[in-house]
Length: 286
Image 1: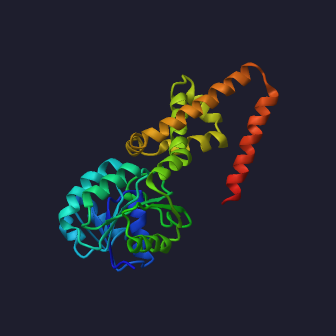
Image 2: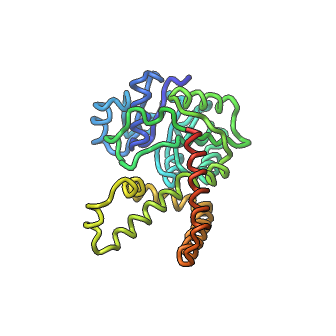
Image 3: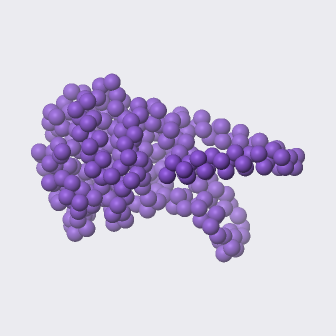
């Protein structure tokens, strides 16, 4: 499949990917490309890569696949940095949570020098940094691959096999379709969790609330502990689709307030029943 894989960016996602590739012996060489020299020793000690370097030329030499495990806003700059060292037949992918602009810009920059195909494993953690890597982070998770009319069928097949080797479930979407779907199932829930905890932060007696909070509070608040910088980047890079959904969600809230104030029991029950049936439909898919 691939002999040498380079991972640019060793956060939770990059670190977990490296661990899976190294320890499950999926490829011969995993080379981590990092920004800080002082992280190299720890990355190697944790067995997140066979090699690690800050030198782009050294990292990319002989690489078959380059995985950009970095925020969407950093992809353009990273590709410009690696351009002088990419070779024909090399496949470059990303694991960003937003696709349309990333894929469009990347294909334009790379041209025919190599193959760029977007990837998005639908997994992660509210923690960040490679020291918080998760051993089986990619196991049995959806992985969306976003080819375009420019995509090589051979390169696409190789990338699909790569993600399948990590036990992910492959879905193919175009970049715009991806951004719309992921805005609903991932980005919007994060906005709601962040907003909920901001509301809690405004309360004078929040410490007292924390003492009595239980399961539902924990379920709603968990993802609000995610990286603020990372999620700001995601929100801004998918602002078009996310804004549409937030406006629709706001209408739902306004309607619910109206039903409460009118004490419309029948309508409230109907709304909750629809919600419950939708939740059951989701659970039956997993």
